[in-house]
Image (tube, rainbow, N blue to C red; front, side):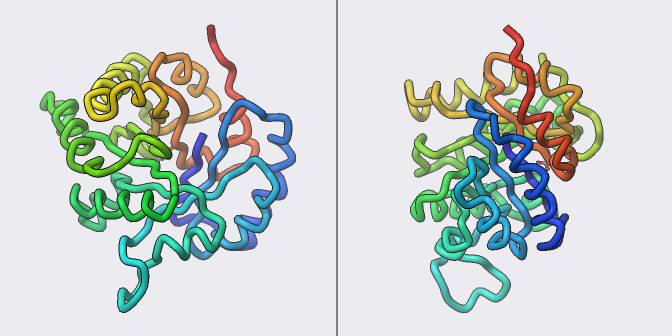
Length: 244
Ligand code: PEP
């Protein structure tokens, strides 16, 4: 279960969250927990997570190692702050910061080269879904974005844009349909290793809907925005009930 805090929380708020959250998940053994705070809070979060099962992720990365790139953050800087993963290709980066497939791919490659796990996001807009383009969009984003990317340390997140921050969740059937399609594309690229790649669902996941989403065969976790901002809410999501 991965938390994407987006542009929320100061350093003090991050410490306060982790003070509450970490003890509340101390008995969790079978769910990997990842939190992606904003850049300014990474180092403080990394310190607070040290020695705990909660892992740190960044929300973005730049592909160069160092130099004259004002405002950018290099892979080694993320490692230095304690990050083990990075989110790449989030729809907000694609939409507001004009990151196309080739930019997303360069970021993913740089992350893997540095030893960071990649949480690779794909997903269609409402218009694209309504015009029957969901599978085409998801296929293009995966085919172009995963060029040169290894299966190890790769997590894919399916995030329908119409479900992000809107309170509209994909139904378990809608999620499973696309997740199964993602798995097929991953099989073509990675063969049997595709079975081990975790495919997260993202888009208005809450403590109320997490059980039914996690019951889907190809839904292996969640990428959670809004509902990850409160420790008790994210802890409930992490402690979802497995339906048989
Ligand atoms: C996200 O931004 O990755 C996300 C899924 O947000 P929310 O849970 O708020 O829809």
